[in-house]
Amino acid sequence: MRPLDWVVLVGSLTSIIVYGLYRSRGSNTVSQYLLAGRSMPWYAMALSIMATQASAVTFISTTGQSYVDGMRFVQFYFGLPLAMVVLCATAVPIFHRAKVYTAYEYLENRFDAKTRALASAIFLIQRGLAVGLTLYAPAIVLSVILGWHDTATTVIVGCTVVLYTVMGGIRAVTWTDVQQMLIIFFGLLVALCTIFVLLPDQVSPLDAMHLAGFAGRLNAVDLSFDWDNRYNLWSGLIGGMFLALSYFGCDQSQVQRYLTGRSIAQSRLSLLFTAMAKIPMQFFILFIGAMVFVFYLFEMPPMLFQQAELSRLQQPALQGQYQPILGRYRQAYQQRRQAAFALVEARHRHDPDLERQSVAAFRQSQRELDAAREQGSRLVDRVTGQNGFKDTNYIFLSFVTHYLPPGIVGLVIAVIFAAAMSSSSGEINSLATVTVVDIYRRHVKRSGSDRHYLWASRLATAFWGAYAVVFAGYGKNLGSLIEAVNLLGSLFYGSLLGVFVLAFFFRQVNGHGAFWGMLAGEAAIFAAFCFTGISFLWYNVIGCVVVVAAGLAISYACPSSAATPSTAG
Amino acid sequence: MRAERGEVPDEPPPFLGAWRRVYIAVAVYLVLLILAFYVFMRVFS
Image (cartoon, rainbow over all chains, first blue to last red; front, side, top):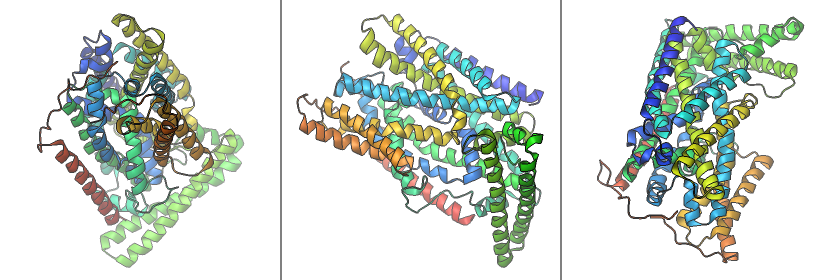
């Protein structure tokens, strides 16, 4: 980090915080603090929804994942537009007309208090764990830049975010997100252009895309069907749709965003805009990761991108094991570099035979390089006594800090920080909302003043912030953070989605059926997680189907609780 | 809390006339997007 980077970084973050606090004026009632007085326009909600989803994890982890695994992760989002259409037709009008603060409040209107309490508890557990990961990601940024330990940086970032979140209500969070998304789009565009500029003169952007394609890094669509394959077209469309339905329909951190809309139409437009923009945006981020991969074809990447672990291997006591692996890695890199140049040359000559030979040599050298890197990772495992070392989350940051010019580094780091602050604050805000509205006001103190609940909301915000900081310490053991976040969500979302499907579409189901159906759904999901190799995207489908089936069966078997009419439509 | 149905009007979309048409447009957009990605992948691999 050079002085200009610090100026850009501090300037960007300060402007975001000042703007957010400026926009938070008037958030002095519970309705204003938690729902912005239901006054937000569609574009603010849409950008806020996207900003909340596009956390620091998105930039740090997604680009790294594309570097090592290609762009197939984009299929994960294919179900999103379908889910948004379903939600616009069902959940949005229902929640708006019910005039609820939380999605789970609606469940008591439809079923009973215990179903609302269980759904709230599931959300609090799931989102409480996920917010820790959201906080951990920017801590990686600081640890790479400043060389500090993850724990210290997590605490510092966490305390800053908590302070900011407690002071600003959802209005501040939303308008801050708008500003952040503009910075994010600008920063990403600048980062991609810079990568193209940094490529060798004889390698054009078109060549770069071919190289990425030959290395399997542009694998955006996989038509094969395999239950164990995490990302293919079908798991993306079906599993992704169920996950998106759960996330945007049942997760308070998202529902709360479109509940701030000034009308049903404004809320629908915000979701549909997100549906249209999210996939291209994710494609673009993954594409940046693929281009970072191409950049490192011509510039030797470190064998391990996590500097702390690399330094550990470089200790004198480990030289006997480390040096042979490093030698193999360097040799493989030189072979790959030559093969990449030969491939570009073959393409320029329009010689198909030479191109085929070059592709084969290029892929062979890539496999050798991957093997050497894997050997290095396993050495880290042996030295640290842990299993499954991965440095995916450090790849993009390592590139940014070593190769981007002054000013751009500060901008990209500001983007990551802004995204992290936005996501964390939104999640903590929604956790506090559910804690106060669904637990505290419903079960502890039912007749407090508005001011009392406003302060309760602020205290709950502080509590969840502290909780997130503590859990963030476990983030470093979870490999790719983006996958960890989505896996965690999938363990809980299916049953939440199931109970809302019961609420919206099955008027004959009663509170007992909904409550025990949710528990059955959770049991099925954890059984799938523990005893099968089924990809996590399918957990949402499994959980939802089991909740609906069990809810219907129990309601028929135990019709004691009177079923209430469905409010769908 | 009780649901207060009917107090929030369901306005038409600002374009295409009806929400159903907007939903169909989003679905068509998704199909075109997947096709574009597939072609992109095939061209560069």
